[in-house]
Length: 324
Image (cartoon, rainbow, N blue to C red):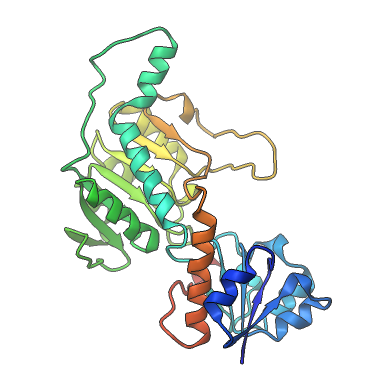
């Protein structure tokens, strides 16, 4: 019988786990084990929340090196200390687990930009009430480019296409999907963004994508385009983005992720005065949140774990070399 170690729970989790895995998988609740390291070593797969450095002790990390595979509940893995993952240990991310709320957030941000809601709110707060002059636009019929066509990218494409946008996608290789009017390879990014009215970044942050949206790519975008980043801030050059926004007031950016996120307290600040600009929409890295998001993400992660354990078609296998 295969053994699945779960680093959180069992309270609030066990019922779902039993329903998904049935009696064919032995569940090991690592937090309840007296000898956590030994318990980890006996597992075929370990499901953790983030697999960040602090989530496990040094002894636990040493034990994890001898596990065949590990799986995060989180979608991103740039927080994982890759050097501590065993050379022969497969790492899986939660592909699509958080996609539904993020896709809704993208649409909300796009509408906020196209309807100039930040500008209107600031003007009204200053006592200026004007009907005209904002250049309000429709999203319907516009071209949306999804850069990074994984689980989140596809759900975003579904949401935007249902709202009336033409959707194109960018992947390592040109993605093919009935939702897409065109697929692009990542090497063609400058040309791809040049044809889009809305560009949504859904890429992971790794050695390949870091700083990918630099001055060259940002300049290639239309002067009245909207850029939305719900992935990782490090994919975008902050100074280049500020300069593009400052020099082109019809160019909009909606950012859910930031270069300095004080997750454990402390002051939030940016290198540039981005938030002083009227063509910036912001949220505090919470695009994945709603009242049912965690439950959905957990179920998706567990179902993928079930596929891994039975040798089925699993998603989210990470190329660890891209993160070292």
